[in-house]
Image 1 (cartoon, one colour):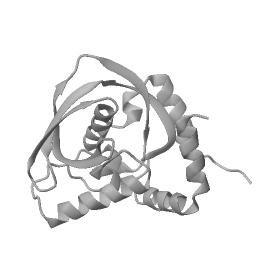
Image 2 (cartoon, rainbow, N blue to C red):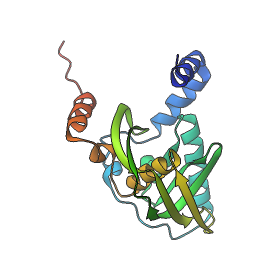
Image 3 (spheres, rainbow, N blue to C red):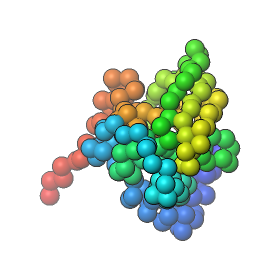
Image 4 (cartoon, rainbow, N blue to C red):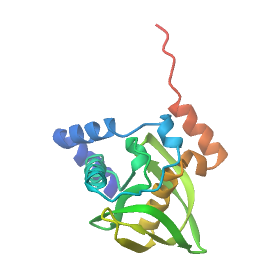
Length: 187
């Protein structure tokens, strides 16, 4: 049994954790929600409302068993996301800008809290430097390697209205869309 299979089995055995996960996912916009395709506006006010939003996003991300969450995924069109920047370090980045991309790229399967049940191959730079501000307006800069660089690029895409469906191969996109389309049930 792989580590991931073990985690899934453990989660299935914990009804309270599964209930929290389902509740969190119900508060995250799901494909094809229009907000997911909209570009977010820059954060201009670093106030209590923004700090509450960031705390809510961090909690939703944890409860949903995610590793990143963009404001657009909770229906807020502001350029801010939260993500695991290291093993146990969840941070917020407002007005993020990828200021450096390494030349090396890899293709790996990515999932998304807004596109449940689908993993898609996406090519990303293996190293990046991302700059922005934290929830208090202080300048932040993170030099990231895989897997953290992948997560930051994924969340940055969300703020531009770009989904993994837009970044994958045409074949993978077709297959994913066939799984995501609502099924007509005849009785």
